[in-house]
Length: 134
Image 1 (cartoon, helix red, strand yellow):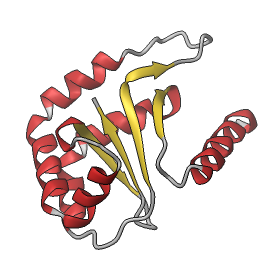
Image 2: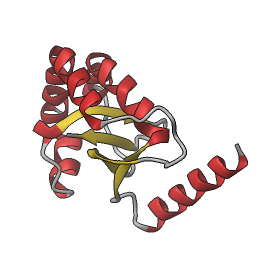
Image 3: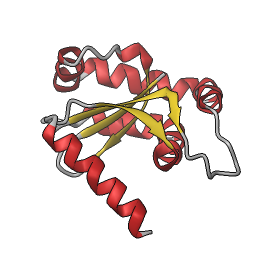
């Protein structure tokens, strides 16, 4: 557990040093977050509509899974693609909310993130966003 927290802390430090503009690979640790985010995309869309300011923006590329060689249950990014297809209505609502909100639209455009590739978003209490793209 301590080792995992150290890796998480190191990731946060790296993110802070890059000003929140980092593009990261999908790891075992945030695979579950992406899956939940895809399933909650419709609910998140409602939250995006009320977002008036943004903190940092982190982009997680779901196509590139950095996995531990010690894991027995190998995960594959295709699982997330299937989830996004199954929850296409929620993902469409999320994308529409991101596009309709001028704050998120501008931040994503500034980072070169195509809204049409986003399948999930985590919103943090300070207004920071973590977006998951396929």
